[in-house]
Amino acid sequence: MAVGLQAGQGPDEASGDGFHPDCPGHVLFRHATSRWGIVLMTALRPGPQRFHLLRDRAVGISEKVLSQNLRELVRDGLVTREVEPTTPPRVTYALTSLGSQFTARLGAVLEWVGDHVPDVLDARRRYDEVG
Amino acid sequence: MAVGLQAGQGPDEASGDGFHPDCPGHVLFRHATSRWGIVLMTALRPGPQRFHLLRDRAVGISEKVLSQNLRELVRDGLVTREVEPTTPPRVTYALTSLGSQFTARLGAVLEWVGDHVPDVLDARRRYDEVG
DNA sequence: CGGTATCCCATGCGATACTG
DNA sequence: CAGTATCGCATGGGATACCG
Image 1 (cartoon, helix red, strand yellow):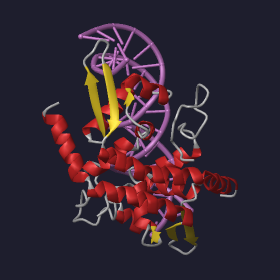
Image 2 (image 1 turned 30 degrees about the vertical axis):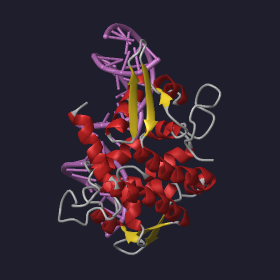
Image 3 (image 1 turned 135 degrees about the vertical axis):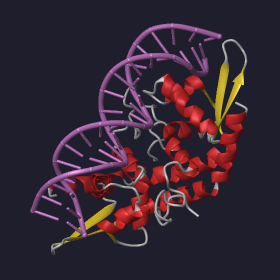
């Protein structure tokens, strides 16, 4: 059973099945596909990365938001966080197998989107000029 | 080339490739995966639907937000809008082939999420209790 | 180095009311 | 029936400063 299929076929409110915004699967999806979630998950695909490296890859992210996002991903079980208690500390993030699977599927979507940007651009132009 | 892979490997700012929030592909992705975007796209998979039917399926949506979302999806070329100029008017929305392809890929992600909700729940419990 | 704390703003969404 | 107009709020995220 998918997650958001047929929202609102439940009784009357808070539709019985999996699409209410509070549904754990929905929350996971929002975290992983948030503005920075995608960047971070993707950045982790090649292998484990340290905090400052992720900060550099996610150009423009603030440290607050970076750590916020990572914390949620860790909580959801998509990412691991490992601390070596040296001074200064050394913290490494990596995809779990769960995160790896999710990111692979998400990657297919992103790749498709990338391949079809011209079509979207065309559609917008047509929509904007004529009406 | 995927869309958000390796953000920030460009020169210095607004990373050359496809992940700046203003990137058309990113915007498309945000529209289609917004709170209601997923519900609407999914609701349209079985076939064309009229406005009031979509409103009923997306339990809790306001008409304002429904028409907002549909308008963006139409503009992005994922959905068509057809008006029969009767009184009262009869407006039908349907997936384009573009929208159909996108939704299929997205569906794979949603299905995966649905299948792994228990794992996520476990992860969160572990995270919350121990730390 | 790897964070937190604080403040602020833009956006998305909800509720309600009105219209061609 | 299929919208638009208006208002108001919660949330995600940016900027800056400080800490173990």
